[in-house]
Length: 117
Image 1 (cartoon, rainbow, N blue to C red):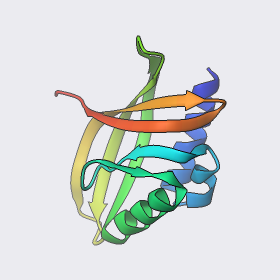
Image 2: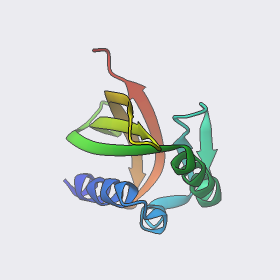
Image 3: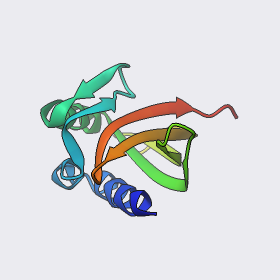
């Protein structure tokens, strides 16, 4: 699945804190879910600012577990997410779904959906 390769590359870059590598696979006017404060950040500049702010407060690590496509054509990724505080203490250990709209091999929109445990 072509989207799986694209997204695995993006997850690896995110976990490595390589913002430029992730931005390279995002539409310039991407809509990206703001998991910390709610709503969305839009465009490369806002995504860069959001992640820089996030990483100054917490240390998230996300591992894709399963890829699928929903009825609307979005790519759905089941993700195991572990978030540490800056002292290394686990503050979140959960599974969520990331929902992606992908066009022309670029991520146009990302949403987050809770998974009921």
